[in-house]
Amino acid sequence: MRIGYGWDSHEFKRGIPLRIGGVTLPYPKGLGGHSDGDVLLHAITDALLGAMAGPDIGSLFPPSDPQWKGADSAVFLREALKRVAQAGYAVVNLDSTLILLAPKIGPHAAAIRASVCALMDLSPDCVGIKAKTPEGMGTDNAAIAHVAVLLEKVQKKAPARRKTAK
Ligand code: MG
Image (cartoon, rainbow, N blue to C red; front, side, top):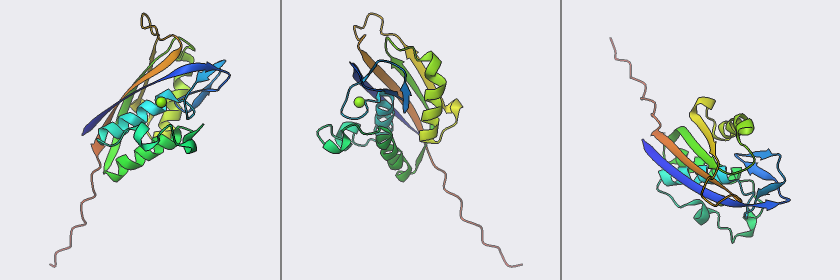
């Protein structure tokens, strides 16, 4: 078993789409960043990479590289999942906490969970989506995501037994 932890934050900016967990939420402001600013997918990606003791998201997909400008963050997540599979692991479950003043995540939590499940091939009971407001933190113009993931080694199929001659 391996555990991974990821954290990310992005600042709200007016006039760009708000992407969280691969879902576009109705809101006049989105999260700025070099990619689509999907704070949750970035934290999940870093949690997976961290569980593999691998390079972090910023090392694999540097913001200075123009090819990631406006990129769909699902690309980053897929690369992390590929590395997990190549190392012989599978995701058991993940839990997340979003911290943002607005919009309220509750009405969108099911859609976000469904999107993350589809991207990661997980069932809904393996993906925690929680949200809190940043009371007293002074981060009202930002969205923050914390993510923990658990991985397990994939069991290799036992070789077929040779039939013994009678
Ligand atoms: Mg980020």
